[in-house]
Image (cartoon, rainbow, N blue to C red; front, side):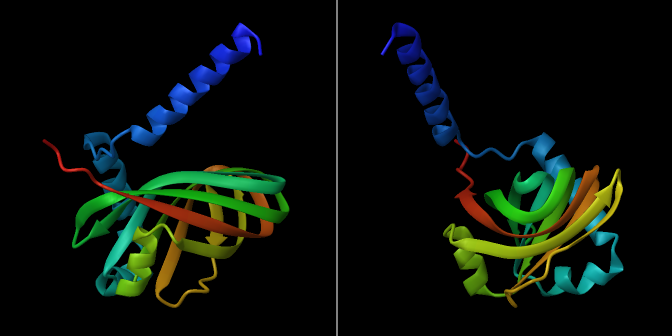
Length: 180
């Protein structure tokens, strides 16, 4: 292995370890993004019962989806329990089917049971299935819920994406660290 290759490997390992050890911080910028997302979702009267009945909800202010037959999505969000942020969530999605384009969206997950919330916090939470079509900032995203204890709603923010696919979303949870 050449010196150049070794240097690249060491650099990648340092970057990867920095990502793993980075503390979970909920700062003013993130708080503002979460608040704007909550305002947007609360503006939909049909979601009022979900806000009232949920034990907790996870808010994802900015997610990105890309697809060309096979696709993926990524986003970070925040879990709110009793209106307080308790941790960060990471969403990764893989899907396959008829899909083409790129799209930005925001989403919210409502948890109706302690069991579903505990699964989410343990990082064992997956959500499957979607159908989606969007052009620019107009669009609809429908995600059928196969889990009766969780409801997910998506608001398309922009992009161009045509999709009829099957996939799975995985969520990993990282509790907030107390500030010293």
